[in-house]
Figure (cartoon, rainbow, N blue to C red):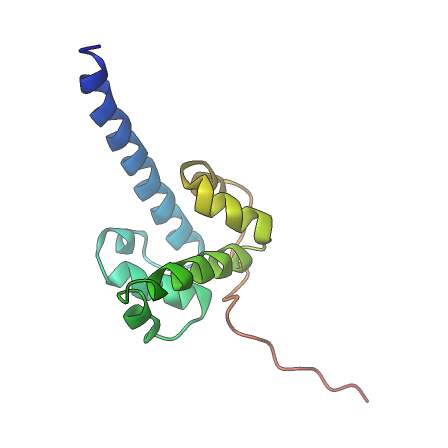
Length: 124
């Protein structure tokens, strides 16, 4: 039982490092500086650029209750930005330590901001 208290913090540090490396790779895939994942607020700015949402969303991330809704929305838009669907979004939310590395190191490619709706094409 005494080893449990030694390995538990190591386990959480390993998960934290894995998530930082995955975030770095996701930013790099989207054409943003990977080191940006390490800088608070700046990483939100980069994420908003990746998903195509305005900077005022940062204010929504600091309002209790509202931030929960906006983070789920942003996660869904991140998933769509890499060509994934709602099922993958649920994986990012509930099993993030598995799905973020899959997004980072898998075959998914950045397809542009999912938050920007393309203008309709007129047909002659």
